Image (cartoon, rainbow over all chains, first blue to last red; front, side, top):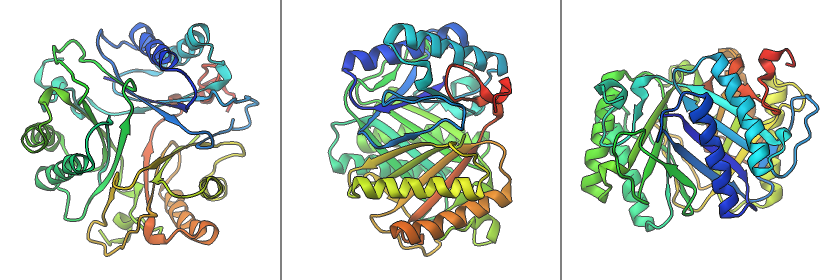
Length: 129
Length: 129
Length: 129
């Protein structure tokens, strides 16, 4: 159920984009309590000069490889979120070479009633999920 | 006031995109308590391979026509959301041939103070709405 | 920390897009309690016919220059939001000629635990911010 928006600068190959998205999904499955098949990702590539990402004075040096991940979800707690951030940084570095400095993540919460995965039904309310 | 993001794979004609967006708006007007003119839609078309949409094990078969609709709104209850999901699935199928299997909807809630529709004013707070 | 999505119709120059984004950021710094360097903006340009923006019956006349700004943040109150809307309308008009009629703003709230600005850490929880 998390709906994941991944925004990045154009320039990666299709395979690289897929590997990045696959790795994000793997983290959701492993440390964010997403069940199998729970994948809803929208990847948007932007021309140069359309992402403006600084560092809130944290001394983080960004590159043009910066990736912004926004996750809409319900039900996870603080510990799960922290585990997700750590897993994303570690695995995206290992698998696709993303610098941990180039990863920005933001989470938004909604409720079970806020999801319909198909057929016009709210599967969390119907008992299907 | 709902702000509606519609993400889909490129390939539809301009008229098809408009018909899809028009139908979404019609559902908001008819079953989601949107007043006339309350239309705020952002449609983004993606190249193939940028939407990764599975089914949470629900047995829903997606096609490359899959549409993801994310709605930011305030004030609707559970019944209205369920009515919206059902109306979207039914009418998008009737009007633009969207398979009910290819419709994913996610809702996020904010508050009346979170909207400015123009002129830098928060119209829900000023009494204009 | 606000994550700011700016959606607009293609046609502005790179310099115009940058000036618009810079002005939005300046408003965050001046009236929305964003600290220096707290800039996280994703600008998406759309072809004509992909933004459908009406006026909720408010009598606001849109043009094809309309700009939709969606801000995900935590911690600001109603007064700060109203000050932001007003500042955005005023300064975008002054600096980049945006008609106040062409500015739509929507805010979404999350929590301190919902942010990781880099390195896989939740900097609001670790004490770094």
